[in-house]
Length: 102
Image 1 (cartoon, rainbow, N blue to C red):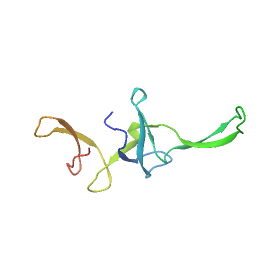
Image 2: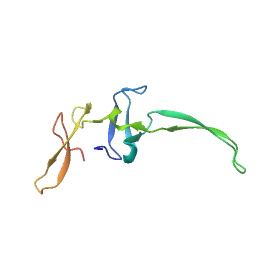
Image 3: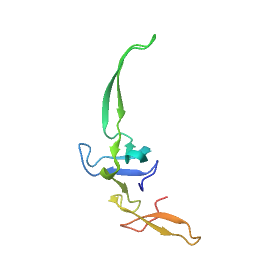
């Protein structure tokens, strides 16, 4: 998975198509990501102890193939490529504008 926590992404398919958000968490084993404000679900929480029951809204995981990273130059979705810098370290770059992503 080429996505990391903190990346700004756009959803390219599904009920939230076109929405942008920041990755909160990556689930590498399942190839899924949790994006802020995307794929909101409702969960009913039972009363526990002295606290009353409630209805909670939270972000559910979305498949990593359904999001694209936002290009810093064009502000549109792009694929991610890799290249090496002058020190020989591998870095992520945008395929559209060849801009560094980190």
